[in-house]
Length: 222
Image (tube, rainbow, N blue to C red; front, top):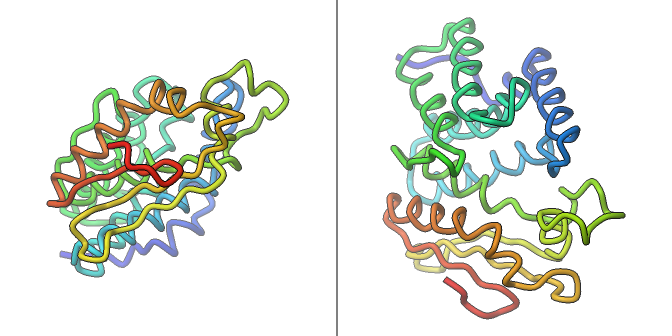
């Protein structure tokens, strides 16, 4: 059984947009980087790229994009366990739209497993969401540029001049290619806060049958 609930509809739904706006306002108040529409739309585009490259069908790709768009709404409740609370919120929203259980499952299992504290790549959508979310590192996510020295997360994100995620020509490797301004942040700073995320990306890529590789300033790191 399939549904008429599309990614386009989810993006335009005013209730969902309200949750995303307020979830981002909540993390902003706690000093976190941007988690609003720029983030969730970029994550959705990356999930689309990964799933299409892996040969998933069109509807599976769309479900992955919906999961990506909704993945951080749990922050409106609390940053702690936001993946699990977001999955419950997404279930209620999608159930009220009469989406069938087999499609809701794909979405809420991905949302509920995207945070590194509890994440597990249970299926292709979950694995793609984990990778897409954890590799969204970029300067434009930083809100408090005036105090880069005081926050390592802001400093590392701001130091990233370019970030690209792409498959190797033979599609055997998924490569995160970063250009980091080492005058702002050292490569060691990056690994200090993102090592667990990169290991999770490697685990998720392995689930998809590919190798995750990280390249910084032209040099392969993992």
